[in-house]
Image (tube, rainbow over all chains, first blue to last red; front, side, top):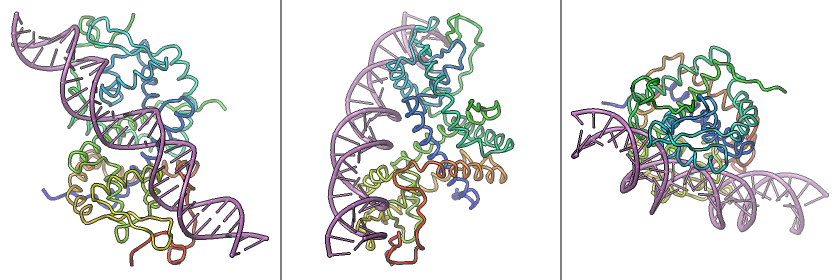
Length: 178
Length: 178
DNA sequence: CGGCCGTGGTTCAAGTTTTAAACAATAACT
DNA sequence: AGTTATTGTTTAAAACTTGAACCACGGCCG
């Protein structure tokens, strides 16, 4: 099939996207490196954990949520563990599994640095978007994510795992401590 | 001042953005690595050069256009030069300067791999956006870029250079061969 | 002219990440 | 039981990025 080139409007949008995403990732990394001593991805690990029930997540779930490979996550968690922000525990229900747990220290770090991070995001992104644009942004990005996750689960593993409900202890995927 | 947290809508949009951008950059890198043997940034270098007058650009201009540091660009161009896709020339009007030139080989590589790249972008992004969303995407991203470039020219150097017009040979910044 | 500062660009020295592939352990299915 | 799939880590090697230092040149000013 002959190439479906981008229209001029699409080209402009694409260029704008590339520029924005490069600048944004750069700004986030810089700000967080300065205030939290870690790049954006690592901060996201902590943020994700902080919102999980009991502040703990299986490695695979965490990787999936962050859209990164397990290998990459292992590396990240290793560093965060060295920093004392995260601790690893064995999963009680699946002896293969390990669980990343946000430590008190990690939580404190997060609480200390979140305001600065949010402020950066706000100034870079949301301060100049009206509510409709916010909604459009979500829709657009959700569509992109869906397109990329649907077609090619390129990340290690297997794509969306459809499994039995979480409340069957003998096969549940998450390891809450309770 | 007390932290201006994100509203729930903003949070959703932000999460969606992060997921999409990670997945997208990953997909682009993977596709280009496979078909062109280089990551997205390097491909962008070639693409940028291909559109410049005479397929050549000053290093600083190129870096600015790509929103990366000069150092990073030097590294990238060094590799592209080793690959034969780019050649360096001295700038005739400014003996400090050097100019990156897209070689025939580089142009051929670009022409060979552009269709696959465009197809990836289309499938990931534009195939599921209506014209209004395309325009919104451009506006939103342009706003982000502006916010980030305006406030903090964190990239090496100096921010927007306001200089004399380009047509004064004794101080023009670009080195067309003509 | 001569001195100084600013800019363009590269180099250096680390260090950080990343990746892919291989592996060990356990689980799940047949 | 035996095979196959998952989980998560490890390993080895690259690839990349960064920041600072640095050199050479250009521009300005007295």
